[in-house]
Image (cartoon, rainbow, N blue to C red):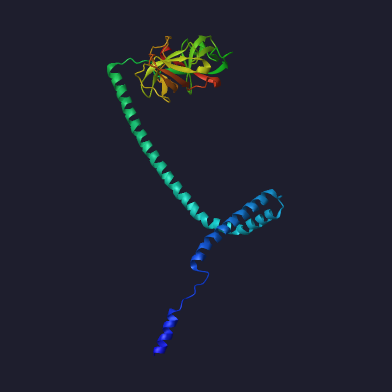
Length: 310
């Protein structure tokens, strides 16, 4: 027994020789090998890309690329067929949600317009009743109190400084001086010369033109003045206390504010506000108006002849 114990102790106490390749040294070498591998792959990629762009179209790299693309194409087609139903389903769902949102918006807009139309109709009927009760004397209204005379444009201005056109209707059709002239787009001007078969129309852009006007959006009144074909129209005599914004619609006011004795009927479209400015030293706002009528493309006009004149 003692002899065996001595032998066992000797075996247990003998030193163990460690291997030269320990785990710690292999762990240190692994990142270096990975970096070298990545660097080598990057360098190889750069070399292949350079050679690919430098070699002719029929070179081996181009051929290899074409062969690779041809080999991968069936997989691309299969993936496309698998993904297409899901993509179409997503597009259908998105379109359905967008259509529903647009339908809700339009439905709300229709309801609002229906309510406004009902209010306007009620106010119109009340207005007619009140006018009957008080025997109200109103100015001529457009278009009911006017007889339209349709006429073609025969001659255009000979120069940009003369803003008049000649139309194929005159006194034989009941036309007189200062009768309003319109087009489907809005106010064109007024009659300034009449013969039995023709008449001269001075356009709204002429520097001698002036029309009492009102801003429908903010109820600001002023005077539309012509500034020639290049400068268009300006809305003058609008006090700074009134609000006027770009995009506001300007129509005839139907009052005696201009130079001419013949009143334009109320509610004929003139144009929209394109520019607004004001300074502390000026009394009135500076307002530019874009005409509703394209005066360079007039082919026919409508002269408004008052029915009570007949």
